[in-house]
Length: 215
Image (cartoon, rainbow, N blue to C red):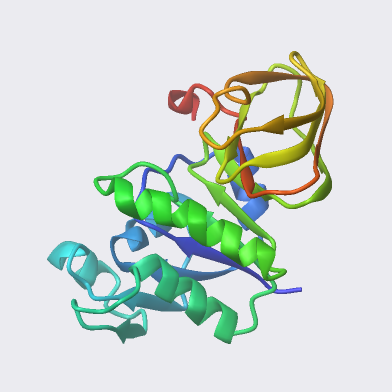
């Protein structure tokens, strides 16, 4: 197994959970995401992007990190290019840190879609800001280790069928959820959380650290 930590340009807060998830991982940074290397105390082995948002101070601070430079007119995001670089280096699972928030909502959305695509291709992936986490939900039974009281939502990217949620304040039993429905937004873990999906594309968004200022 070879875990890669991909540093993206969104918001990030260091938490004990994120430290555990990143422990022992190899690191690839996507453009301005390299700034998170400071906060996490990691050293990227590669810095990927068109370098339109890194800025001169970051370029100077990380001058020793090997770079893979792409033209500004490329047809992929810096994050996608960083993921491809990690896969070419043998990544078996990925942690996309800084995957939410930031100045570009379109890039944040693409990170979610990219995670779903990777999961469907058999690549385990976690999206995180430290304070919140996203995990693709594949058809079948999925178990999660969140503590009681953790807020979570199931985001549907298509119509969902056969959705069951156990161990939550508002359980569901084999329901169909139309695309665009808010039925699965804002739930809370009560015990061991289990989510079963019959068909469709979905992502679990959980908030293990609802107060990011605590760290």
